[in-house]
Length: 349
Image (tube, rainbow, N blue to C red; front, side, top):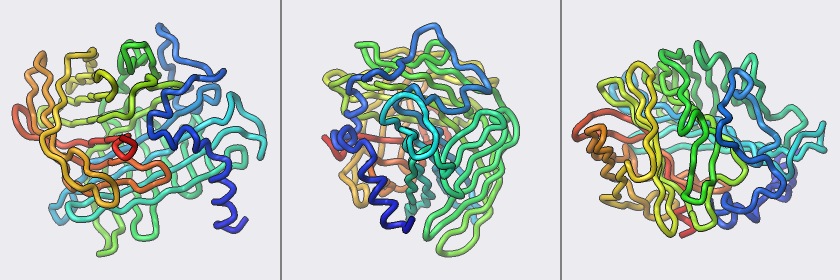
């Protein structure tokens, strides 16, 4: 099918009505889809694969890298699955829709690309063992507890990385059951935050070899937000002492916070609502998108963390089919380090 016709078909099939509400559309009713249940924990390798009975799911990788030129680089790879109705069916009868995002961010540029696909025809999907997630030629594959590869690209960039896990998978919340609101909305959520990376970027100015750290997030749900929540601010930080921090703030009539403190040995401690302080300090234009906070104070008093988190490049706006800000950050203050920040829902507020 010609690309322009295929894209038109996909646009007509995608559940844009919910997405037009911004990320607040994720707070609509579950409509017969499965919902996460407290007391159930992810099982591996089974849960590396898809969950078609749930409405939405993602395989999400971010990486903070250093080039052979000494500069900082950030990299994103995401595969989203969204369902028109629960379950799977063969061929074009599949109700599963797939979307991929890839990006590379430097101190002075932000390059991104998007892919869309209907499920059931082999163009996109995921399998648990051996693990593989793909859309077209974009692919993340391997062993989340061992070696992995990642490749993707757009019209003006490409990357090919080799990754090796140096720590365990981490379950967030209550054994992987991650609460998102006072009303009890939740997702299943785990991460692989201990990936060491080597590889190559292809950029408009040429090839660049890179090394660094990567972080994979896996999450699935059917109603991850409450009805009054418009979006989130999500941090994944790798600190110089080897600790990791996942923290998020969900914005609504009253903000809801949650996160996980991850020791250098992989020991995870849940951070309940109210234990995280996330305060925007400065905003800036985001490129083609709205003005967004690009410098934050993030504090976790119980852990002695009080840091400033600042965007490497404020203009890291993902001008994709549903738009958001995603980019690498630098950490300073009580701790030093690097990480990633994702901010959603600002264009809808």
